[in-house]
Image (cartoon, rainbow, N blue to C red; front, side, top):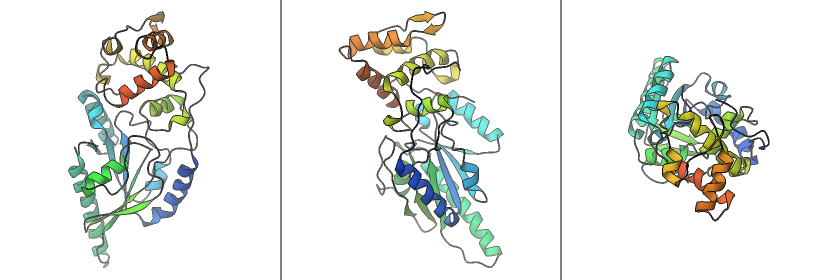
Length: 296
């Protein structure tokens, strides 16, 4: 995918103090954990994969959850499902908001616990509840998943990054104890395309990026994704939503700045920042339909 962020746009970086503190606490608690339940955003499965994951799950069972399955087209989900299975990884698809896929995830965690306790018995040890860690980037839906698993609100959950700020244990029946961890990010986001996708999906804090620059990059990204059927971006998507076509700048490159200015003039009294936020919020709330920003 071509360069989407303008060279003049500031780099997207976000590593607040509570995340650094949470990662230290996470490292301290890893020895107590039998199973790692890794949650990623289905819209951007690669961008929400942590580079330190293999170090954290070493010697432990691992379940991969792709949350927000409702926000991507079926074709994209099928493509990612086949891709992960080809890598030897079974993905568990969920929509924590609606509860879809949560029961299947719980059953998979219990099966992993049964296998662990069978090994304990074979060594002459008593079975015990399995200790699982829920791990992932900020705002991928970990807390919402936990509340669905417990069937009550036991942890705070909101569609913004940084709600969970400390580790806490939650009992899921007699067989499973779950450690809810704050979202963890790499200390530095070297891949700026991945960082852009994180910003678009609201999986990093708003202090990390310039909203207008990210909105214009989104307009350019949508134009490129029109050529990828599985992404779900139909021709004229923004024109249907906002009543304005995206004009070309040079060849096939869309004039994202010109479109944002025109849209601001029509919808937000010329306020570019408000129009940029409106566009991003519409995408994050699903008002533009199910779209996949990454494909295998």
